[in-house]
Amino acid sequence: MVIVVDCGDDVQHYARTFATRPLPRPASCPGCAAVGHLIGHGSYPRTVAAPTHAIAIRVPRLLCTACRHTVSLLPSFCLPWRHYASGTVQTVLTLRCEAKASWSRIAARFAPADLPTRTTCREWVGAFTDASAGYLPALLRQLAQGPGRASAIEVALADLAAHADPPAQLVAAVPHLLVALRAAGVTVAGGSGRWLGTLWQWGSGRKLGGLV
Image 1 (cartoon, rainbow, N blue to C red):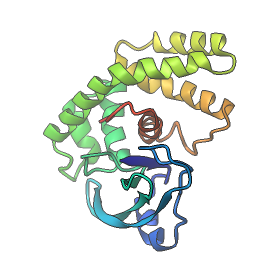
Image 2 (cartoon, rainbow, N blue to C red):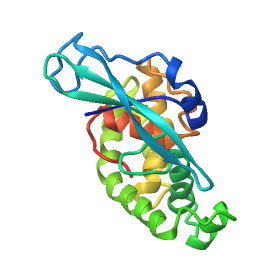
Image 3 (tube, rainbow, N blue to C red):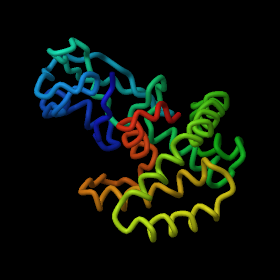
Image 4 (cartoon, rainbow, N blue to C red):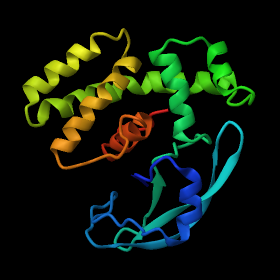
């Protein structure tokens, strides 16, 4: 099981300060919902890639003493089954889904590095397109349930209408999600600037599945 933890975008800072970082401890187990049963259970190594280098990090784990399942506290800059940091993936998605950039233009964005490859970028865009079909309705449902929901959903739909397809609409809906979260007392630092990590953290908490 995985809980996504907001750790910002600075992967190197996370790696340097891992040993002294306070361990987030959710009140209840995401598996069995037992309260007060999560304890520290070590960590495991992981590599986070950028176009020009890779950074070794560790991901902390918790153990539920009630159901005996382990829980990984995955930094929000990590995406399941993806080696690249969410910031790199976000750059590709923004260029392709919002700006409708060509693959050549996307490759030029990372020059002189020849990574990520075009095949990898296509996989990211395809996965995000598929995930948008589930994430976008869920996000709109959240807006429809929050304070001032009538005006919130009306403004959001007007913004979304300016975009032709669900992936671009999902990106455009993130600022509205942040407004709804702030109204509920949840602040996401740099949320719009790192919209992919924000969406991933929010969707993971609602068990919406992989985003990319």
